[in-house]
Length: 212
Image (cartoon, rainbow, N blue to C red):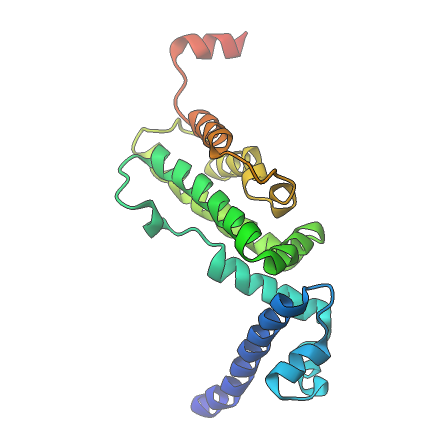
């Protein structure tokens, strides 16, 4: 019975994947605003009705397309940090690496970048999930840094949330879309360094000043 359930479920999963793939192709051809379900169905060689059997609306399809793009193209991974031994350096690397992925999408995949701007503006589930994944990874690094003594002991979830909030301008497509083409990474590097420094233990002098 379990095998039968798996077999029946597989065509649905494949259909979802094919619709999302065709949707991405349509968005790149026509732009997310002009893409419609008929375009996606045509690229699939199917009827719009068959698409609506899986996705109830164009909005849901676009959210799924954005989610796929966030996961496949805009997810900076731990392996990309290389052999960085310092947790602070790894945290800075994810902040800047994620920023570069966003910049690359803006300059090299403009139609999909327009889609993730829409996702951010509408606070779609795909964008919320993307930020949650980033914050979870930051939280893992903060936890590691506290365990090794590199960062001061504190509530990990709060620290991760504050770190992400402090550098959100590096990750939010709405803000990145307004950057000048001559944008220099120096300012991004300074911002990431400043945010990482806030996690380090304070010196005795800094602690007394904070208390005042």
